[in-house]
Every structure is written in C-alpha cells, then in structure tokens.
Length: 371
Length: 193
View 1: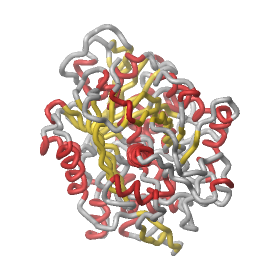
View 2: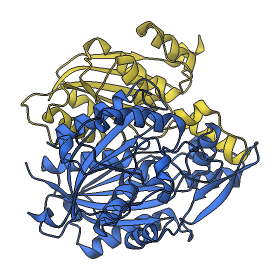
View 3: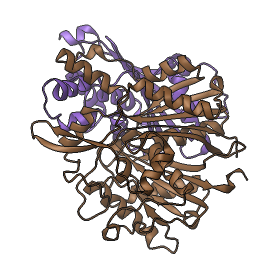
View 4: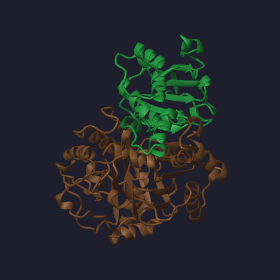
C-alpha cells in the first residue's frame, strides 16, 4: 500500500507568523505572545496565547491555502479540503451577540459554511469539516490519509484552526480547567490547568514522495471512550489500547518509536490518565523519549493535532526538542536535553478530547523519506 | 456496502423535548441526563435500530447546524449577559457530544466522527465509513444525519462491508431502497395534546 506524505506546511501561532520562526522561538526560549482575559462573575484574570496581529478568519484561511499553493501548486480539482476546528466561525456569532445584545437561533449559519466558501473560491473537489473536539485535526490527518490510500482523491488539504473564542475561554473557565498561575506545566506536580492558544495550520497530503515531503504518515487509530464525556478512563487503559492499535495500523512495534509526543493538557485528570496509560510501555525494554508541545503553543483544541505535529516536525528538522523547565519533577520522564541526535525520527503523537475521542498518529521525519 | 437497517425520526418545530424523551424512554432502559435537543434527536435515530448494532461498529455523525438552542444559550450567557456558561451546556456544545451518547448507549468501541453536512452528506459519511470497513478495523458502520430547520429529521443507516461497488451518488433514500425503514413522525397534533 502506498505511503502518505505531509508535503507542505503552514503554521501561524502565538509563537510566530510562520513555522520556521516558531521553531526558532522554541529553540531560543522566546515565549508565545499572550493576553489576559477575565473570567465572568469570578473576576479572575487568566492567560491566553494569542496571535499579536488580529486578522479576519477568512483572511487567515486564505493566506494558509495561498502559501501552500505558492510552494507547490495544489491540484484543486482533485483535492479534498478537510477543515478541523471546534469553534469554526464562533467569533462571528460572539460579535453578533454582543452587537444585538442577544443571539437568535435563526442567526446560525451552516457548519459547512467556511468549507463550502473555500471550496467555491478555489475549486476543491469536495470539502467538509471534522469536529471531534481536540482530536479534530488528528482525525483529519488520519482520515485524509486513508482516503488517499483508497485513491478517492490525489491530494487532501488539511486546514486546522482555533480562534480566540470567548465561549471557549469562559467554558473551560467554568469547568475550572484553565491555569491560574499562567504557567503551562503538563505532568508537573504543580500543574494547575491549561492555557488556550490561537493557531492556523495547514498541510497538503499526498502519496507523492518526489517533492521533498516534510514527514511520512505511517498510520494511527482513533476511537471513542464512552466512560465520560469530558475525560478518558483514569486508569489509562483506553489510551494504552488506542496507542497499541495505532502501532498495529502503522505496522510498527514499540521498538520502532523514537519519540512520543504526549497530549499533556496539564489538567489533573488528563495527565493522570495519560501517565497511567504510559506505564506499561515505560516498564518495557523499549522506552522512547517523551515530549510535550502545549507549553509553547497553548492548547489549540481542534487544531492541536496539526499545529503541534507541524511544530514538532520543524523542531526535529533542527535536531531540537522543546524541553519544559523543571521537567525532572514530572510524573512522566519527559526529555531533559534539547539536542536531538537522530536525523530520522519515528514519532507517536497522542491527542485526546471531549466526547471520549482518543487518537494516536504515527509519523516519520527525516532525510530518507523519499526512499 | 450492504445496508442492514435504517431509521427516520421526524417532527416539527413544536415537538417538545419532553415528547422526544418519552419516545427515547420506550427504547432505552436508562436515558442519559442533561442532553440537548440535537443529542436527543440523534440518539432517537440511532437507538431505533439498536437491536442490529454490534460493538465492533464505527459511528459517523453529521449535521448541517450546531445544536442551536445550546449555542444560543451559551452565546447569550457569555456574550450578552457576561455570565459563565453552565458546564453541561458548554460540554454539550462540542459537536461530537451526540456521538458520545450514541456510542455509550449502544456500547460501541469503534471510531466516532462528526462532520459538517452538505449536499453530499451521505456520500461523505459512507466514504469515511468505507475507510474503516475496508481496513477491517470495524465490521459495521452506523451513519447518522440530524438536521433541524423548522421541522427536524434524524436519520440513521447501519452498514456492513460487502464487495458491492459504491454508487456515485448516494442519498438516504437510495441507500435504503432495499430495506424497510423504521420511521416515527411527531405530528403537530401530537404537540397540541
């Protein structure tokens, strides 16, 4: 069966307006741009990793597509567009509600509005949105790759984004999941929750290996844990099962994995479940390096499956791994040295979300991708 | 792909959530609590054919709109009234919440996707399901489409893999042409009672 490659990539995040600069910012310990917001009723300040320069959503999305198309002409007529986002154009409705001091359900617009707008503008063969909470982009990559392998399309463009939504900020605040210290410390004993982040990411998938792809997607797995709508089983058994199924799908075994990118939200429940889910692997004779990405990007929700993947790929290209301060105190043995020795790296990346969605994807970066 | 079972639950804008819950209770021993109208409608379509569904089933849900009443309540709380949202409303607002409740009630352990619906919704749901059926990771696929403008329609189709070639154009009627559809319609008269 043919391989699927990530051909080109774009990332605009609170770290930088492009992927290369974002990786450099991580390497030089430059923090993400942020702003504070106030939790309603409780009058508490919380931090949000926001892009400095505000821009309309459609401009962001068009800029992402145009950048990819500039580097490698997208055959739009045979290309599927998959949008991955939890909020989509929620900011439009937030603005509308503030302006008219209330929201009328009839003001809703179709969930497919952005996808169909971009489909009509560029001539994509088909377009739809995947919304599976924080696994949205991971599922977009996974199912985009599967559709390519079935030769449904020649290319798939995955566009993943999350805007600074007030509903998301207040909603996670109401669930008491947002950090009060403004320090993003997954798996750390002093962790106190997540920091949300804004990002716009895109990648072009195809089976063509001749255009110097940035990574090869080997496979993955996604399934629903029905124990709780807001979290996975605390014992980590579903997470461990999903990782194992991902290995099987990618025709890998544990020894083949060099690095695991943990989901690591820094919430009490998620980190505990992921720690427990990792224990069997950590007690085996094939212990890979472990890393997290959210302390640098924030939790970019539905986009994290792509924004974290792209930033990690760029860091690995520079033979660098983001290292969290005081990582030696964490409940999982996170990597502590930023220098990454491998020129070719096989990564398993975890993404978990509300709605019981757990997903793991496996990809490979490095010089010999075209072989 | 072979269609095993299908359902179509429909009603009008005046159909109350209470009416939906009463029907749900006839099909489920224990109904989930604190679920919104969109989740109720989607659940009804799925549990109407639950006797045919096995655990090794993937779930593929689509809708043209978000859960409108939930979104309206959230937006009004946060943006108009400057209040914190109710946690259960915020959690229900994730589009895959309906899929979670269907998977939980039907004890499904396969994939659980939610996509935005357009004119090709059944084709796209079938295409995603075919990925997993052909890989052998699941043996059945449950497709659910729920839509509410004035009236609402919640439709479900249960598929199994077969060597049959997929038709170029797929809609609910053509998918279900060879089987009896389990239907239930809430009329305006029901609401007036």
